[in-house]
Image 1: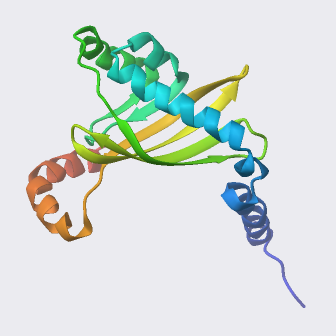
Image 2 (image 1 turned 120 degrees about the vertical axis):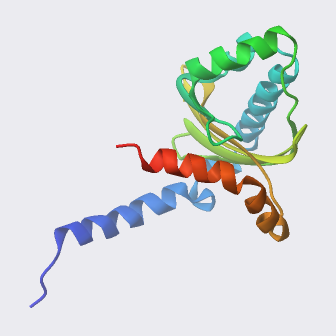
Length: 178
């Protein structure tokens, strides 16, 4: 007769339960225009606080245990580390101005977790940001944010060539870690 693999059954069951929860079409909060607009304003306000060099508001919008991943391969910071790194720039009024071109926001069914992706007009050209927010005590906080420059597919070979030496050094360093 049939022999059931409990791990396989568990994995398939998890997929049926988890995938719909991450599908914005299945999330009842997706159609909550007021909630989405509030989150959009929060993200735009976070970016504006950087443009205004308002370090306290900028870092205060991030979760204490948050993560910020910048455009350089070395830029993987906790909120505290990112705060320490960014403060001198803000003190010299050298914050960054990331202007929303396009943004997509998705909200989990419990309306306490949201995720987004965005295209931004920046001093580096068009960048893509993506992040995860969590609502605690009726306050949204950024738990995870990634900023990346966009590269047109037809330019990938040129970019790869430009950064091959540096990439090789980083790859070797990371591969040598235990």
